[in-house]
Image 1 (cartoon, rainbow, N blue to C red):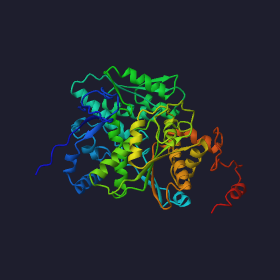
Image 2: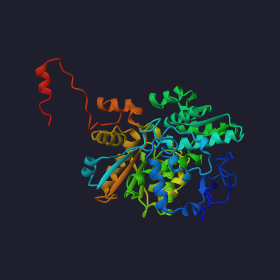
Image 3: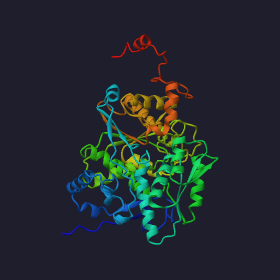
Amino acid sequence: MTAPALKAGYACSEGCGFTASLWEVVYRCPRCEGLLEVAHDEAALRAVPASEWKRRFESRFATSRLPDGSGVWGKREWALPELPLEDIVSLGEGRVPLKPLPRMAAELGLGSLMLKECGVSPTGSFKDWGMTVLVSAVKHLRSRGTPIRAVACASTGDTSAALSAYAAAAGIPAVVFLPKNKVSLAQLVQPIANGARVLSLDTDFDGCMKLVQAVTADTGLYLANSMNSLRIEGQKMIAIELCQDLGWEPPDWIVIPGGNLGNASALGRGLDLLFNLGLISRRPRIAVAQAQRANPLARSFRGGFQDLVPMQAGATLASAIQIGNPVSFRRAVRMLRAFDGVVEEASESELANAAARADREGTFACPQTGVALAAVEKLAASGVMAKGSSVAVVATAHGLKFADFKVGYHRETLTDVKAAHANPPVELPADLSAVRAALKDLG
């Protein structure tokens, strides 16, 4: 018996009944203004046994040739099943390490603590997972004659880097809106190097987001932020790859930094699909971690998931999640409720010290990952995470994008941070006896 053809389309995430083709340019439901999601034909997916999905995914994972060697397109039936292979735009995203932190786990009383190193990626962040899907869809739309002249996004840095790289690979013009003086130099230079039109605006991310939504109301400019559900389809593969790394057995907890909250909702979508299709036998719990100075979801959680109250996000070292009015708030809340989730926050000292603590085990954690690691410390200390739990943290970007953060930490010059693990260089005369004296206490 031939398995039914796999199909997907847009559906309103609020359940009002609106549907549309994936090849329409639409971001919100025209009936209720809810965000859209990509709805897959799960009956058709279920017609393929879980054992066959595992075999297929693992077989593709063994090759380095694209598109099968992509951590996203090696699972393309679960992303855009009707996309022609010739329209895939891949830079080799995904397939990133799952790094254990055994000393930190032991100190916290956890059974295991692992980092899913999404910064080990073409542009250095998890944004690549979603952007490959979105730009591939745009390439296909243009091939169908849809008049899209450019793709555009608002960004705190990583989204603009991913969009500009994938758009450059596809030969599609890109426009990025960045908040002036609020992104690292490494993040700013990436879209410039890839030839994007960079608009540095005297506002914050939320101000940039308002402007890009207004500009992309012209269908000639295509919106590439995470309110576009095509992004979520790629980012959900992080959860799927994580479970594949663990032999299709999820950890007890998955912890993820939260800013605009698209990645949080993507995590839930990936886990839902795995569970519904029988590739995993249980649901992990989820924790979203926010910087204390940009914590609208944490405030809502403390009030029993009250409606979002937008805030003016304060300056934080975790600049990539410095967002006070997250677009995917409602989607993230639904995900947290479905996965018995919690929200924790971290101060500037807590996030900086947690990142430095992880670095002592050979990683190079970005400040956003520091927020998630600090949340693990607090949840383990409070008993929310039970002793012996297995925990995976989604490390969202590479620390090399935030070199100033690292330098400031070890020089002890970061504002509002007491650096518990500072390791400045030892300045000595070029003298053998002085060198020997400085090395006496090495183990």
